[in-house]
Length: 154
Image 1 (cartoon, rainbow, N blue to C red):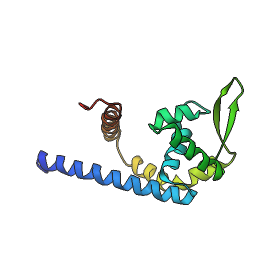
Image 2 (cartoon, one colour; image 1 turned 90 degrees about the horizontal axis):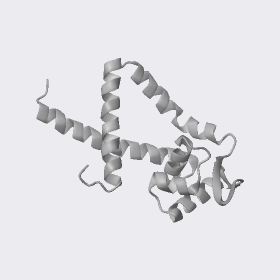
Image 3 (spheres, rainbow, N blue to C red; image 1 turned 45 degrees about the vertical axis):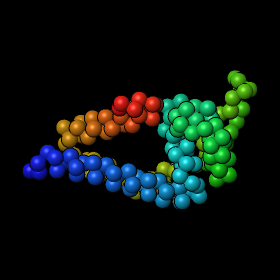
Image 4 (cartoon, rainbow, N blue to C red; image 1 turned 135 degrees about the vertical axis):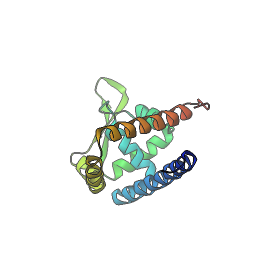
């Protein structure tokens, strides 16, 4: 067993490598869809948000991007045939983002091989290991979220 200090250094290194690999993977998927990474991030956030359909304002809040950046990404996503923007029938000032029929399948197909392998890998882990991993990821995400919200003591 490694001494604690070496294990912690190794964990920091692995976190760093994971960040780099996730960035590279997002670039790979964005390229497949004819998008840039910011467009893909907007698409992923809109796709996974519990509030559907999402509005550009909500997307701006969730991503931390300026309204101008959101508008640019939405134009790119429309041009790629992945979303449409429609007026909100209950509030003419708002716009609703809707996925073009079939576009979710195209997006999902880009992630399917990696998701399948991850599911197989996850299936080999025990319940306690999964709980520890979940606790770790939730803690990391909270630290990052707090820091992005301006809590520099996070």
